[in-house]
Image (cartoon, rainbow, N blue to C red):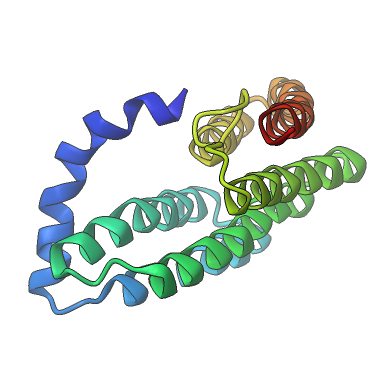
Amino acid sequence: MFENLREATKRLVSPVAKTLVKLGLTANQVTLLGLVFSFLYLVLLYFNFYLIAVAFLVSSALMDAFDGEVARMRGTSGPAGAFIDSNLDRIEDLVYLLGFLVLGYPPLAVSITIGSALITSYVRAKAEALGQVMRGRGIIERGDRLLFIFLILIVGSFQKTVAIYIFYVFTLLSAITVIQRIFIGYKAIR
C-alpha cells in the first residue's frame, strides 16, 4: 500500500531534504537522527508523555524518508549508506514496536509482531541478495507498519480496547506477510 505512494510523497520530501542539505547534514546524520528520535519516542512513552512521543515517532519515520533523498541530492548514494540505513531501520522497527510493551499491550502479540517485522525484512534482504525483487511484495511493508503503529497509537490515546483489536489485526497481517514473502521468494528463486 505505502509503496504505491512513494512517488507522490517524493514531491513533499524533496523540499525538506533540500533544507537538510543546506543545513549541512549528510544522509548518515539524518539516518542517525531518526534513530535518536525513535529512542526518544520510547523514553517519552515510558514517562507517559504520549503526544510528544507520537510526534517523535513521526519525526523518526520521516527521517527515513529524508535520508535517501539527502543522499541523492548530495550525490553520496551508495552501498555503505544503504547498509547503515537498512540496519538502523531494523533497530527503529524494534524500538517502535517495543513501545507497545511499554503501553501494556499483550506481550505475546507484541513478540510475534516484532518477529514478523524482522523476518519480513530479512526475507527481502536474502531474496534480493539472490537476485529477486521483493519491493512491493506482501501485505505489509515497512511504510505500512509505520502507518499501523501510528494509527494504533492515535486510536489508543482515546480508546485502548479498539486499539488492541487493531493491533491484533496488525499482528496477523504481519505474520501473513512473512509467509507471503517466503513463498514468493522461494517460488522466484526456484
